[in-house]
Length: 76
Picture 1: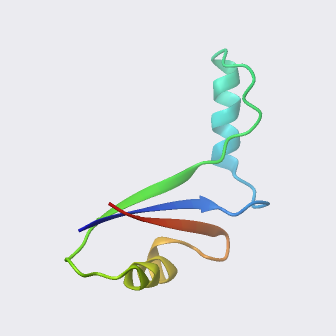
Picture 2: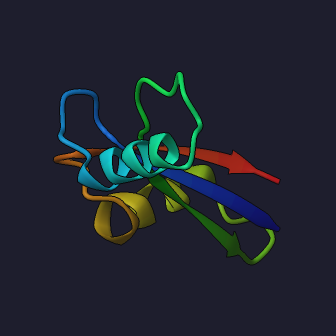
């Protein structure tokens, strides 16, 4: 079983990496990019029968900083 966890900063949390990417895109001639939010994707190979609640527990304890990040779980 596979799962994909997408982690992004919460709205309102400053994203300096996203801002650096937006600035670099402008410097390369890609006009019209008003904002960039940068995140991470974690793919998990799991034992069959692993529940979404168990994956959520992994996210809450390690994979995401729930104070400043949101996450989304996708079972593949």
